[in-house]
Amino acid sequence: MGIVRRYLLPVMVLLLTSVFFIECGNRVQIGFPVLTPADGIMDARDVDFNADVYHILNKWDYYPGQLLRPEDFADPASAPEKNNDSPLDAVKGTWRLRILAKPDCYLCLCSFSIDYSTRIFVNGAEVRNIGFVSDDPGQAVPKVRYITLPLYSGESGEIEIIYQYANFMHNEGGFIQNTLISTPENIDEYQRGLTLNAMVIGGGLMMLFFYFLLCAAFQKNREYAALALCCLVIALRNQVFFSEHLLSLNFDFIIAYRLLLLDVSCIPMAASFLLAAFFPQAIGKRTLLGFAVLFLILSALHFILDTHALVMLCHICYYVCFPFLIWFVFRLIQVFRKQKPGFLDVATLAAISFFVFMLIREGMASGSDSFVNHFGITPLAMVVCILLLAVVNNEKIGRQTIQLREERQRNDLLLQINATNNDFLRTVAHELKTPLTVISGYAQLIKRQMERGTMSDKIPERLKTIQSEADRLAEMVMRLMDYTYGHIQKAEMNAVDADELFRSVSTIMTPVCAKRKNTLAFRNNTVSKIHGNEELLFQVLVNLIVNASRHTEEGTITVTAEDNKDYVEITVSDTGEGIDPSAVPHIFEKGYSTDSSNGLGLAICMDTVQMHGGTLEMTSTGPEGTSFRFTVPKEEAK
Image 1 (cartoon, rainbow, N blue to C red):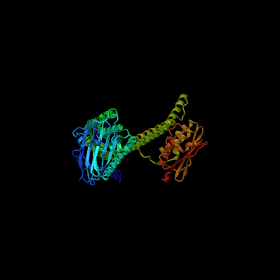
Image 2 (cartoon, rainbow, N blue to C red; image 1 turned 30 degrees about the horizontal axis):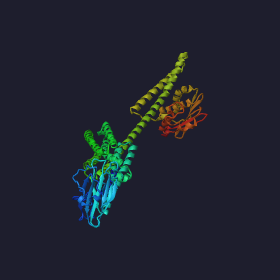
Image 3 (cartoon, helix red, strand yellow; image 1 turned 90 degrees about the vertical axis):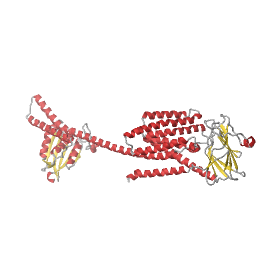
């Protein structure tokens, strides 16, 4: 199920999306039957325009350098002389085509206006004026629009079409764009497909641009940033989408023209950045930075240079990308020699290579194919490429997320281990402090007696206690070493005599309590043996008495043992100051302390008692003192 959710569903969505965009793209018919005029006349009397849309070849009569009107052709004897062999470099001129069709026939012609200001006459009447055609460069207003011309053959069956053009912003002028003719119904169907393709693909790419830009902003992801740039430049590549639908009718054409050529110039740059984003190991940062700076300079020149130089500047942008592409291929081969490419690398390279191939094909067709000039052939390729790369990038992010989750889990485990080690070290320090305190106390007492010259008959007993504590300290160090090297031995449970346990504790803790002028008393009211580990129970009592003595001065600390069914209850009570009520809920928490201690004593006691199968609780506290009670099982109950 995980594989289906992770791979199959995304692939299905990818296929459905691709099919949708491809079907929308297929609504735009590309291949058309050709009608070829001869000497400026196109004989279409035998053409069935109901059957198809036809492409009129650019075999119109051409009059370079002249702005002619229908009346100039009224008298055939004085008609101007045409020059169809003239190169298309005149800044102004006239095109004329006569169509011989069936009488009373309604047709429709569609195309982009032929140049950067166009006036159109049909059967002697002016029907369109795109921009403003003039001999004076100061008065001419440049404009390019997609046009639809209704045609009526009348009784004679002849249709005369005259294009005037003026071009003061481009090196080559007067090029007849891809011109289609058919019935109004067929042209309407063609334009519906053209609009659908422009709006769905162009608008879809713009939505993808904003989506990828948002992903790049939130995730700081270079792949998404490169995809956003590619979506933007390919969406604006479609001139119908950009000029006819995205910009308003009154938008300054010169700015729109510069933006359009800048967009075309940025397409190879966007593809180059796409390669660099998905294969950063093949492109050094300095190379990429230098390439970016160069393109920023070239982009700025689109708004500085004269419009006549923009087409050449656009070609330069394409030429600049070829050395980068060659260098990228060379570096990528070196990378793949050292590191075998994975499936995602191969899929990424295939998708981008397909897109680059379509870009090269489009670049080779630009200038010679009017359809390519205005619409490009890369939008659908870009859609497929982007969808594939989005799936690849999501898979990479998914893998990175899993890796990050695993790293976080490892870090959490290390933090837990570190916390455990810290607790262990604090525990060890707390356990080692008690015998060291006893040894230090007795040693200081013997030293003072020796300095005074009053040797007590209890010195041998005290030296024996020092020796005993030193031995216990050595045993604790040995157990610490065993623990460190992974040789922890399970605590052995035996029968423990309460009287002997109390005597051992009394010997050690009486002088400790005496430092604060406290009296330590033991009462054993049980005849049962305790089932437990004497060393650990000794530590529990020592910790409880140390805590009691710390909060009691000139008082009494009483240790009492009582029988209670299968358990022996041991209570440690003092007459001290009591515990602050706000601290009571936290006294058994590790590290919690109301004074300068390490806050581990009661936590250690709780763990030790629970290990014996008993319970530890505070039974009372207040100005009269505090009592702690813990239970351990009887030997006979086991």
